[in-house]
Amino acid sequence: MPDVLCPGLTLVLVGTAPSRISAAARAYYANPGNKFWRTLHAVRLTPKLLHPQEYARLPDFGIGLTDVAKRHSGVDAALPAHAFAPDELRGKLRQYRPSLMAFTSKRGAAETLGVPTARLGYGPQPDPLEGTEVWVLPSTSPLAHSHFQLEPWQALAARVTDLRAMARAGLSGNESHPHAVP
Image 1: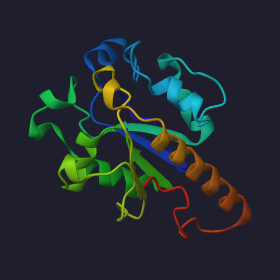
Image 2: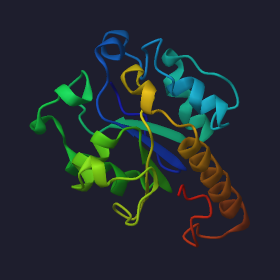
Image 3: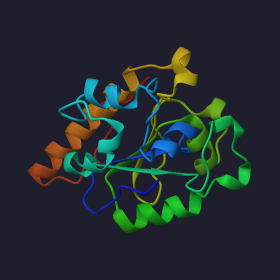
């Protein structure tokens, strides 16, 4: 799956690796049971419901996409440890400098941040990664439906709205996280 990255993005959503369905469709979050596209629209990160094949339109809304295990596909739990390339992700953050990034699963976050999944809470994380504000979100995968929560996604959308307003006002966006998820 090609990265959807460019300078000036407010948010980069970081998946773990494409599912086999997404890899076959050559489109991010293409499994019909995945809530990703419906969630982006429900929390108003996109003004309309996009289809997986429209993933390249996300920069129009200030959003980018990448994965931390770019050369693999499949279920998070089945990915080998060597599949993860956190240094590549760090390089992309240095290159494109988004305002914030959000992992769309705890596994990708854990492998990148070096924190066990059990110790990762949803919402903003205490430390930036390459100067980028970091969030962890519940997975939208069908395998994670029983653990899905919309609230962290809503808090992220509120933070994105705040960052955009601060950018329009000429502020840095580093002031605080008023929408932290408890």
